[in-house]
Length: 189
Image 1 (cartoon, rainbow, N blue to C red):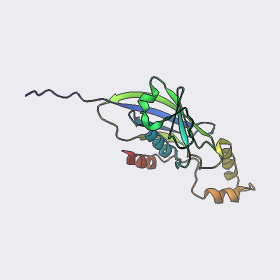
Image 2: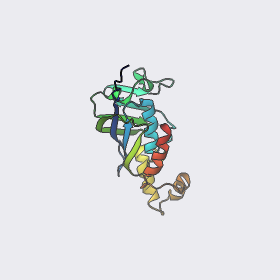
Image 3: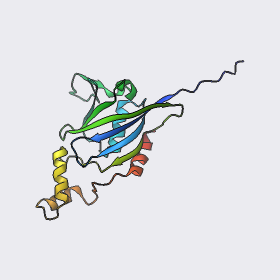
Image 4: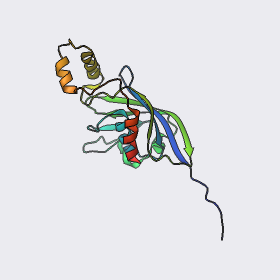
């Protein structure tokens, strides 16, 4: 009887930074994700990490390919995001884009900061760092968000009462609660 030991299998781990385009000061998160995560699951991770509510359509632009959820009337060139892992989609690329809410036009740039392999599998994504709160859903894209911040910073603004009522008292544009993000990300494990 052979007592040969099995060689541990190394799994890919990717450190990436996702930054919301056209918003200043920058809204970003640094994540550690399993490289074998399907793009459909990466979408869910991005939603949690950034603070979106998954209320709108989305897509990934990786190289010259577009991946999405393939809802009715999806573009014919769109590939199924469930059919590919992050590592497979990336190949040698170090940068890609994620679009969310085509009406408001939120664009995110994702930069691959590090790729490694480990015999200790990463079971769920981890948010390592980040800055600022995600804009509220349906606030009108980067321009609408800039306007919202301008109004909220000036109690004498003619739209202050309406915007405060719409947004509620809970919104703090400076807040990035890593502990809360990571608690939710653990549910994907």
